Image (tube, rainbow, N blue to C red; front, top):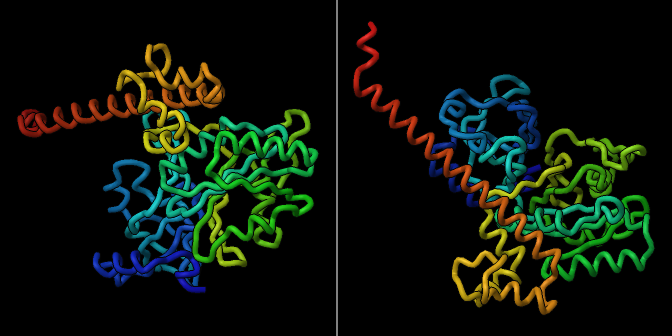
Length: 356
């Protein structure tokens, strides 16, 4: 295996040389376990931890390695290594951190395509698909919608659900598959390109781990049945992991996500709700909220059945969520700036010397 098989590019090689990292070996982060990592080079795998200077200069969780990252490492034991630097990321898929206001959580980095996996039975929810599409568009990652478990419903129902998704997401590829019968797996495999990195996004129980096994052609990821009492998916994948497929594609399997919080996704929202943003150009007021204003082109389209109400309501909900996140971030920066100013004045005033 070569670094190119893992997705290494000439741009990254140039960066390594121009930034004095030639003396280090380059590796890709293929798994993360609470700030301990598994990294893979062209010839070996290592358990790795970050150097102290990388830890102490980090200003947020985003400054730590994530699955998909390229890192500069040095070996200190046969199977152990130290991470000295993170090479530039081409893309970052992230969401609002669960339970942490104004913070983001990185899902994966250096991704080319994202498979948005949704089951056609209990999990089917176009509003949730739009959330995943938004974080993909924000990250400049190409989304592909994968509808699973089509063996559980009739062919006519599959067509109806596919059409319902296509009506709202006209430009996004849609693939329908069954992990049980293998129907559609070949169609999905044809979309996977050598050297490109893909990740799986979706809730627990939609069949991501089984799909990973089918794409690998072997049982590598643990799988579990849906809970009979709750009809909910069980968390089988507990951490993110990067795998190389037989056809040369690179796949990152992610744990199921129950919450897909929207962060500062202005560009992502514009791509997901393109029809609404185009209509908004014709609103009477530039700061139109598309809720009560006279002369609102969006409301007019809604009244004339030219815009789907469910998509409009989801847009308003996500827009409100985005604005709340942005205001929280702004308030947090304001407090951090005030604290920094206070600390600077403290040092300048020589208060420490008074109590010696």
